[in-house]
Length: 459
Image 1 (cartoon, one colour):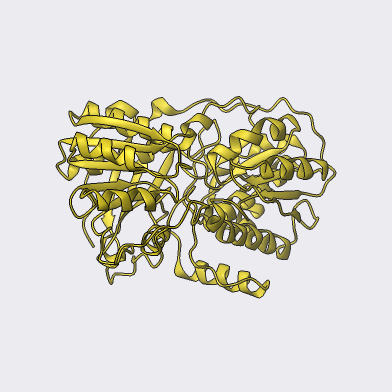
Image 2 (image 1 turned 90 degrees about the horizontal axis):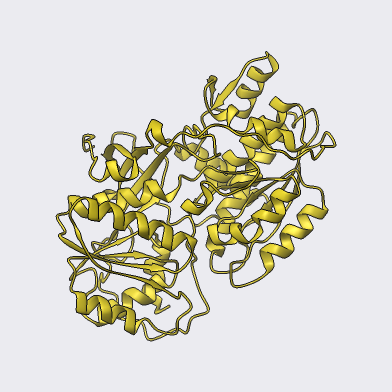
């Protein structure tokens, strides 16, 4: 295992401390058995399929980040898989945000127990049960602390959580992934990086103004991608969420009652599915909604959900736009915001010795947010940003955008995309600036084996 080393380049600009890096894939028991793809990344799109290039490791060397806890054990993953299949589902292909979805349910349940109500007032306890109390790592252990009149500090499957006053983590763990010669992620090259926001980033805990009353039985709804360009995230997120509910109910439920569940599809931002699902869940009097996976989708429904006094808890949102959104203290997330991820990507670019960079990002809250952080950190460190391009992910082709990169001739290219990233990369390869020629860096929206699979299939 590679020894930890400090990485603080660009930290002053974004108020970020990169506290350590360790390599995974060794034989010391800390190996990463699953290298998940992305928080908001789709696996497919409706874009036209073109002739696929011959597979020859065209993506080899491309690096990028995805949130990844160092604490997820193979035993837990096996339990989630077994539960999911026992419910009649097909085997999980990966575990993207399964742990975060699981933790979202556990935190909500503990908050309801601590508040003594499934009404809106439980939201005021969500931050409290993740920080500052007696450490506990399971629902039953934390519940025992509450029963004894104590204050639990839940450290989840996805990490220590430690929520800020605005309901998002102050710390984040990321995997720095790298593609190998087979256009798939090479686990032996994965490193883990931990980042922590400084004290200056801490905000005071607020309280919701909602007076929505509960009925004594916690009901959770989901707003996760069954369909749309994020659908590959659906199964692992549903698996983690449903496994948590099953465990909690086996332990006696919440407030002495079985936790109820209603499933909802979020679709993507090209449809109105999320809004329709949210309306249905609100009409069903759910107390909390787990989702959405996409920051863009969340921003389309957050107002109506929070206006109804319902807690919204995303396992995968990362956009900085949600950090200070006026949500009446009812919105939470356990995926760290992109201020952390963007700085880590930029630090890797700097560490690799690149003097100039071009940034391409999809034109939405996720892409624009992380792109701005990457640019700011690079420029603060003296790296020249030769250009930025916010593109339409539904474009028929990306010839013009890639042409601009060719003309700029940077040392490195940052690609902040969803599944359209495979088409952008194919165009780059055809124009002689693919990952074998230039240094390419991705983020959690595209860094996964789905990218290689789509590239090889010509999607």
